[in-house]
Image 1 (cartoon, rainbow, N blue to C red):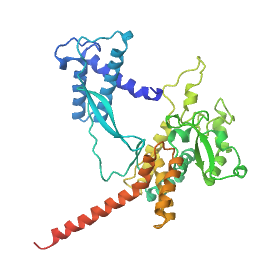
Image 2: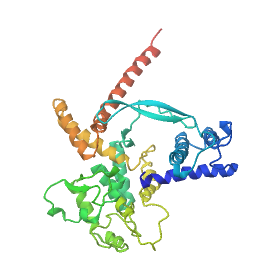
Image 3: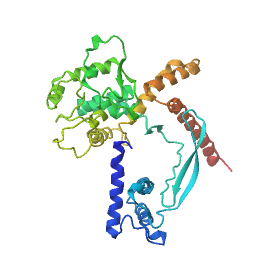
Length: 392
């Protein structure tokens, strides 16, 4: 399991322990013949009560129960744990789940479920304006993009503004943006032979990528690179680097807080050897200040002119993808659409580091899907209105 995944599991198990302590129940006491008196069944009923009372989202309850099940499964599958409950913690059932693989072929996966699992039914919304790319991402409309950039300029925090610009103009994920290094933008723009400038990312570069994908490149347009280079050599950036152990080392992070802390600590740095006398941080550096800035400063500012405005930093990735697709399709025109589609599909897949072209297709089909849906809805609504308003 990835170290980043352990925190929510630990929190889930802590919530389970708190529940058991409140009822004075031992975690390994499965002596009750009546199954609903066993810890796992009692906890499931407790979670259902919290969901029904509006205290907990069903997805959170499902995850907490899943963590508890995984905990007991681990104990039962490892003889050295010496855990053998008197009665079963749950009843298991095997199911076959159909899915499409990365190449679009139908596959069936065997899944084991239990009668203490909390199932979350997901309903598809025809009007869902998101794209599934790792998670559900919402491309920010052009009018809102303009308001967002205006807000960033007015708020005047250069670090957060540049982070946004990188995501909007390259499609980079948060972890990639926040682990860029000084060396990546040190070279003066006039010394770079070709644009867009390619910055290699992944293991060995100090720049994080999702699932540690290697040998991928961030395509940096000249105008953006010039802003990043100007910031790197600025007095403001120099002062922040001066507060770090690396100082002016090119391997230092491009973005640092006013206290000299990285906004996001890369996997390589987290796994590096540490001085045993150094105090451990209470929490990992994983972009929280950026998310707080968005929630407390950017969104309220934009809502002054766009009352329903909302976004997550990760949505800027989808925004880049849709901006790129819209421009390419506009350039193609009706006659060259088919030929341009295949080229755009391949190029966008490389730009966004998609493992599967099926993910890229979602960007290329998004606008057409929404336009067709709107036309169909409008056409049928007009037909009904005519019937309603017409004479019987």
